[in-house]
Length: 236
Length: 127
Image (cartoon, rainbow over all chains, first blue to last red):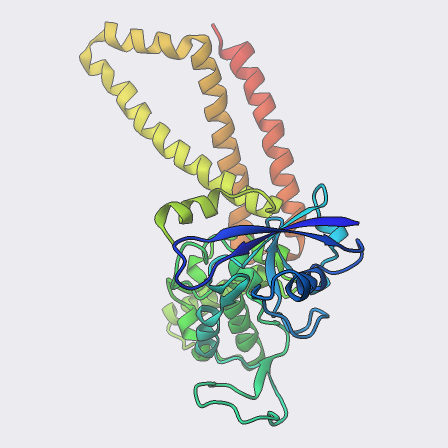
């Protein structure tokens, strides 16, 4: 079947982005990522996009596909095409580096603020990593760090300093597993849980069902209880 | 992101879930109600200009356009209230597992109240 892919294009130095159209022969069961890779191999080698695992575990290929945030590797093109057309754009709320690749440092910088208690220690890396890689051998257990929740969240799209759904959900996990709210006090702030307006789009779009929206609300409840305790003369 | 783009990101509904759409309706209804409060203050202030000025303004609200305006304002009030109650419950961290059902109840309740309220406005309050 022939599909028409309209892909967002932007390179450093351009005044404004543009959209390029590619016609591709593909099976409806093929993933959007597979089709994008084929375009990159056969039609335009300058097309930039991120990918790694191809099975929804690494979170690298988060994109906006026909207006909805999805992992391209686990999204079948036949399921999302509208009249055989698929519009592919980079995630919202992040700086676009090139085409579909975005800079997620805005999200990662908040992770260290919430002292994740759910870090999985990885093996020694096979290559020596540069010094600027701060946490080279750790990754989160539950959240795949794809950034889809930031892209879907109306607040993260509006408020640059908002800690964001995934970081706050991780803060909740930290509080739950350590019982220590002091580790995540930064989340109890204007840029933390109190900026969330409960649109819950993060939970709807999360590809691993991490439910960031629900976790933020539970964390709020924890902070409220703790504040009440403080008011009554107790400690956090 | 430019301010206009930020605003548009809130208004975007294409590809968004009922949850996000409800968030948008609740917010916009709140803004409309705040604006209405201002209009209402101007409206009742006309009494200071005399009975005739006040009555002529009332006549506008009693017209067909006024009736449509009343129904629209009632709908805004109901949406803001109904989705607001849903918001209070979920934002307090309660019944999060039943969140979707609560949202459906909020919408169904709102639609029933709007239909009933519109009937009252058209058939009972209309003189």
